Amino acid sequence: MLLFAFTIELLNKCESFLDLIENDDRFELYILVIPLFNYELNKYEYKYTFDFIYKKNKNIIVAYENDSYIDIKSYNFDYVFFQRPYDNYFPEIYRICNVVKFSKCCYISYYIQC
Image (tube, rainbow, N blue to C red; front, side, top):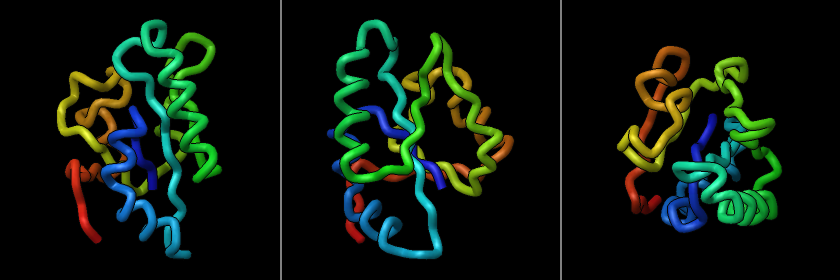
């Protein structure tokens, strides 16, 4: 399973979901930290978000390295969870219309109580 993460604020809104998944041995959750819009404009927030998530979850994937976005297809995730239903926030490679070609896509509302 993979969860896309842009900001700490969005990640905190699905904390109850994350707790359930992370405490269930049937699932292995990875978190992909994606820079919001433009890496150069948001690299400090990106690093801050990465550091925050890394303290809680060691299964973290860096989306942007060496001036490009990594391809997640090779990870063979069964499910990819999105926290935003709008594709314009995502780099082309991570848009739902592309990810659905190799994984089941799920949307987590801004608030979920489990």
